[in-house]
Image (tube, rainbow, N blue to C red; front, side, top):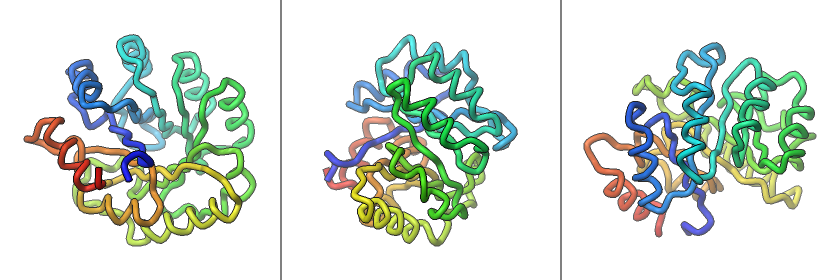
Length: 226
């Protein structure tokens, strides 16, 4: 099963004052992707990383940078990420006036493109752009509020994944289904069963406190089935 599942560790769940150490640990554990939230403090109340930090991260690792932009000014951050040189950029549909422009802006550089949907945003909003997307990121909690430990995945999370997988298969597409928000050891089997094949991993899976990254990775692989 694991060969078809992309593991995307969320760097905002790492030790933000020892980022290089944690990046090296991820590399040692065979992980090749970093999920990087680019948050402007407006779309969401948090702002974990600045542009200069991401630039420095790019200089020290060859890991794939999977960028998730949470902003009310998507074009600015898309352009900045393209300058840095990243492998994938996902932006939110809810804050995009010119969705097609952003998709082509990213695709024309050879960078993979994704669209993120807030929990309550319907899949029907993807109707005309889905064939152009490499990835759809389904937010399973409200983005940027992960610090609130009482916030649980929306009750319709699995059904939304199932519906998206059906839509992708109906159109004979290979679009990846990424899930983000409380992707925990407990919820991962059901998320995969529903059709998710790209997991954003945070404090309830790969970065569980008081365990080493190696210990968490081993537990994660058992849960996934690898």
